[in-house]
Image (cartoon, rainbow, N blue to C red; front, top):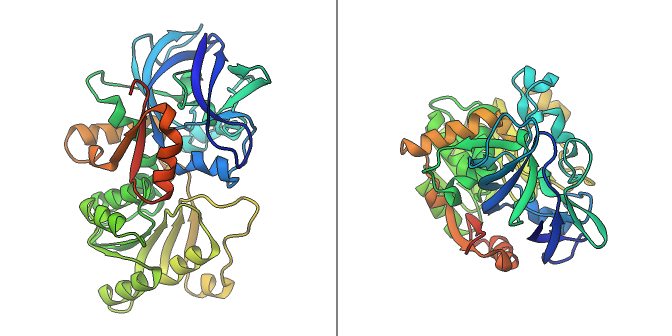
Length: 370
């Protein structure tokens, strides 16, 4: 069949709307009709070269839709199911899945190659194979994806809203609850309030942090952070450091979470300097893989027992945490609707990403029938 998709042919190129050929689903694969796709900075990283996938590639790794057809052997979902997809496939039986670390499932090793777990592609054009971001390609009307990426959800849920629980919401929320392991009463600094940082704020709130300091140079982002539970908001890392010292009577923040758009040496150093003895700094945001962006004093790390750690998906487990967070939304305990700043048609995806880069959106969403 044919499908319309937004794709990138090379780094630095603009998003291109193209008509592609899409294969039938094979064993353990499904055909999905996408309803919505979130505009996450990770897709824009492809365009800027901060993430280097196999090109050409269909963008979109935050998606929700309806299963239209199942290939042989599919058991996790059935035709007609509504699903939110995980940008990290979960096989369920590798060492990492078997030990409760499914966010680093072995299937995830090839998500930037754009192929499915069997090493082949389902999108094609006249030039040959076209990859799919994180094995999904939700910037297409339809995709063929692995059932290991699918999480079925209740059919009465608005897919254009719960789509955010495929990436941004759990990555931020889990960064606070799991990766940073915030406990009641702690003081936390969160650097960067976009689609990830706003949910790190929500996670810190749910974990019981007494002081949540949101750092962002944009006033609209600081205001949003307070709406999501931040107790304080400041424009700079220097102000955050000073405030943390004041709130803790000179001890320092217990935890710091880095959710800026592009992680650099400066923000890492600021976060580590701001935490107390025995504190933890969590790096959730992405950095240029060709640059060294963590340069710290070994003496400080030893003498003050500070911890710096990276996290993928906030160290959560997709098959559990996607449903868990949706349950919290249904119970009125998690804000999702408020995260969506603007909705776009697929043809307007370039404007959507520009609005993100200009700081206008907490989260933009592509609605495929818009």
